[in-house]
Length: 332
Image 1 (cartoon, rainbow, N blue to C red):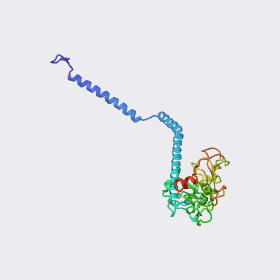
Image 2 (image 1 turned 180 degrees about the horizontal axis):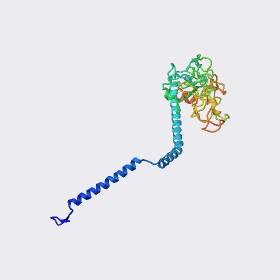
Image 3 (image 1 turned 45 degrees about the vertical axis):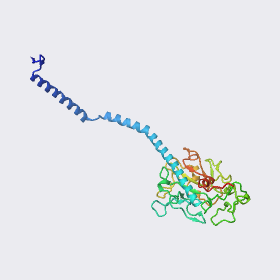
């Protein structure tokens, strides 16, 4: 060591060079070792552990993600049913009747797909056994009438409610005592009668009451067991129409290619669901409550065929539809 001008010890240059070279040697050795470690990668044991962990995560998280996805599809379906209902109310407000269903077996891209089915004397002639929502007639797109599982939503209009002006209750009066008018109607009038057009507010005997008008119109809706009427034509609470999503299993629903699903995608073909299934069973040709025009609504249920039910039903009453379309009875 040599003393510097300030009195501090000064390290010789040769010693500093030796120290620097030693540090660099150690650095290079360290880097080479780390590089060899990184180039070596994971061992088979480490990879096996990672795969086991990923497998456990998949097993535990997959059911949760599937359940969340199905819940989203159910919520989407319910919202679409409400949107379609409102579009049908708008159609009634303008046309004073319900539209006939579109034919579900017509594939997307075919001429006429989504149009209202044929009407003869106001009744639906070719679509009440395979009917889906007529999206073009009510101002919607096809995507608007697909449920959460991308299947067309089934639609049935109660017999005679597709006839001209039949849903106009503005000539009915709550204080009226007259029966529904069946003598001065046009060809398209409902066989159960319309509100008397000669109603005079000073003479209630000339006016039809809402109850008399509602007699014999609409659909009966039963519970899953079929023993309880949830909506009743006889009790004046018949459903004007039904909208049906056939749920996750898609049993007897139409796809966009016009195909009818005859086998459930999941679960089983529920016995209760047969009453809502597309096909000859629900051809609507009269007001008489039969299996052909009585629908079922039940709580969601999995399991055996006797109780399995994952359909989603929207079934507004005839009276509520006329009210929302501003065609309800007047007050005297």
